[in-house]
Image (cartoon, rainbow, N blue to C red; front, top):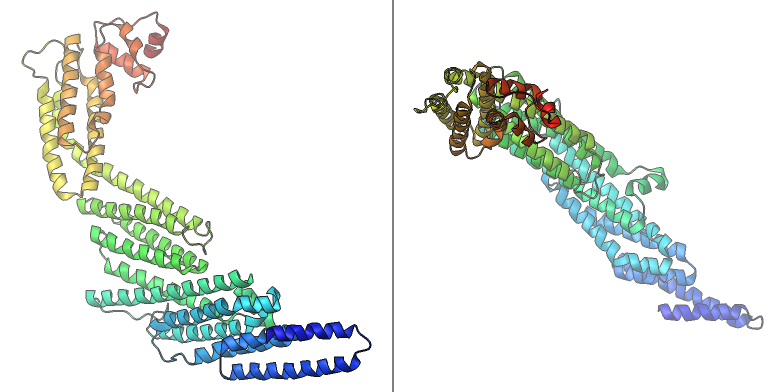
Length: 541
C-alpha cells in the first residue's frame, strides 16, 4: 500500500509539469481522493478495533498524501484513547499499598507503547512530530497518575498519620512495634511512588528531550497534575517520618541508650535514608536528611544533659550512639551520591551538620572517659607515693626499687578487671588507653620528689620502667603501651648518660624540652652541665 501511494504521488508530480495532460491529471487526482478515503476508512476501522499496530501502519501513510498534520493528530487521539481505556480498566477500589503497583503497570504500558511506535512515527512524520503524536497519551497518563495519588493520600490521612492529627498509641511494645511497621510500610510505598515517577520522567526526557513538567505546563496553559499531587504527598511523607521517629524516641524513653537501642534507631534511620535516595526525588531526600539531623541533635542533647551522673552504663550508651553515628555519617555520604537523579551537592550542608554532631559526640565521649579516669587515679596514689620515697642513689642489691611498681601493677590489674566486666570492649579499650597515659603522666609528675640519683640508681630506674611497660603490654595487648611511656623512656636515657657529650646523640624529634633536660641532669650530681658542642649547648640552655 505504501509503495503504491508513493508511486501514485510521483506520477502526479510528473504530470503536474505537463500542460497537455490535464485530463490524465484529473484522473490521477480522483484516484488519489479515492485512496485517501480508503486509507481513512481503514484507519477508522483499526481505531474501532483498538489495534494499535494497524493504526500506526495506516496513520504513517498520511504524510505520503501531504496530510501529515491530520495523520499525527489522528494517531495522537488514538494513543490517548488507548491509555484512557486502559486506565479505566484498572481496578479502582484497591488498598493504598497497591498504588505503586498500579503506577508501575501504567508507566510500563506507556514505555511499551513508546518503544513499539516511536521509531515508526519518527520515520514517517519526522522527529519533531514524535511529541505531538504522544502528547495526548502523556496527558492521560498524567491525569490517571494524579488520580491514583488523590486516592492514596486520603487513605494515609485516614489512618491518622498526618502531623497534628496523630492519636496516641497505647504504651505497649506490641502496639509500638505494629505502629512502626505500618509507618515504615507507608514510607516505603511513598518512596517507591517517587522512584517510579522519577524513572517515568527520565524516560520522557530521554525520548523527547523535554521535561515532563515543563511540557505539560506549557501545553494548553495547564499544569502538571501529578506534580501538584506529589507536593501534597511530600507533606504526608514528612508527617510520616516525624511520627516514625517520635515512636522510636518514645520507645527509648531511658536517656541512657543501650547498644540494642542504638542499633534499632540507626537501622531505622539508615533504612529511611536508603529509601529516600532510591526515590530519586530531591525534595524527599532533602526533607529526610533535615528530619534525621534534627532528631539526632535532639537525641544527643538529651543524652548530654543526663550525663552529669557518671556511670558505666552511661559510657556504654554514649559509645553505642557514637559508633552508630559514625557509621550513619559514612553511609549518608555514600547514599547522597549514589543516585543519578540526585545532585551531588544537594545534602552537603546536612552532611556537614552530621559531621559536626559526630565531632561533638566524640569530644563528649572523650571528656566522659577522662572524667571517669579522674575517679580511678586516686586509687594508685599510694603506689606513686611509695615511688616518690624510693632511693635511686646507689646500687640496691635487694631490688627494693620494684616494690612501688609491683604495688602499682597489682592495683591496676584489680581495677582493670572490674572495668572489663562492666564496659563494652570498645569503651574498655579507649578508657584503658587513656588511663595508662594518665598513669605515665603521674609517674613523670612524681619524679621531682626523687632525691639525687647516681648512675647505678638511674640504671635501676630504667629497669623498673621497662619492667612496668613489659607487664602492661602483656596485660593489655590491644593497647600500644610503649607509645604511652615514650617520654619516660627518654627521661631514663637522659638520666643514664655517662657524660654531657652523650647528649649529642639525641634526635631532633625528642619530646623533652631543654628545661626538662636541665632538670633531669641536675638529678645526676656527678655530671658537669657544660659543653663546647653547639648542639649540646642548645639542649641544656
